[in-house]
Length: 294
Image 1 (cartoon, rainbow, N blue to C red):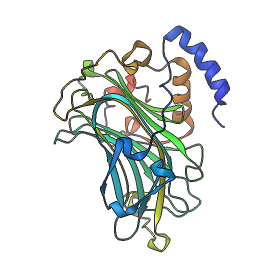
Image 2 (image 1 turned 90 degrees about the vertical axis):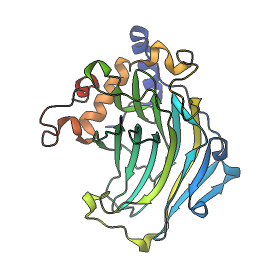
Image 3 (image 1 turned 135 degrees about the horizontal axis):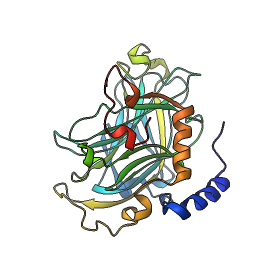
């Protein structure tokens, strides 16, 4: 089953938003790589095309590579278009994430786990707060992410974190401080992306190893959108808090149609959810019901 068409999506979304005052994030603006990002390691493994509007990350048996944002941010909307490593990508991980820098760090992760040819990619998400993670969820995608570019986006404000694939919310992490659950709100984070070898765990728990005969592995990027509250690394709050578009009432929750799309992902595409893993969590984590993860 495919998600509704964009036109139908917008129609339903408009109807749903009337009653709930919710809204989709603003459309990302495509900008060149060097406007918002710089390489972090193995500079020669990043290839530039189309005047720096498109790049490729290359992984071989010598090294992977990565990049990070120039600035640090407290809240905002962050998006990239990525085309994943094609063919036999087992053992490889392509990551796109926000992270702070201290020991009790906050982190918001997209991790794309490669697989053998013909087997689907796995998208893993995770949220760290105060240095604690272990909130993994894994889904299959409803398309082949190696065949074309797709938008992968994070909306982060004081009320919620939402992971989007194209226009589809695939995960929500609400601010549940009233339940005693920490939430990222006072540690600026940089954006990072990397392509690296993780065949000790990434594919079937490390059973499938990277086949270096297929190297170099290539992930392609464009559309390096950042619309965030830029902050010094030591800032504890956003100076424009409450004034930016993502702070407004319509972005404090998803609307009914967005929640139905999230439920579609939950029912049809989810293959692991920490909220239902009673071996790891005999008692369901407190935030799961509020996040509608069950």
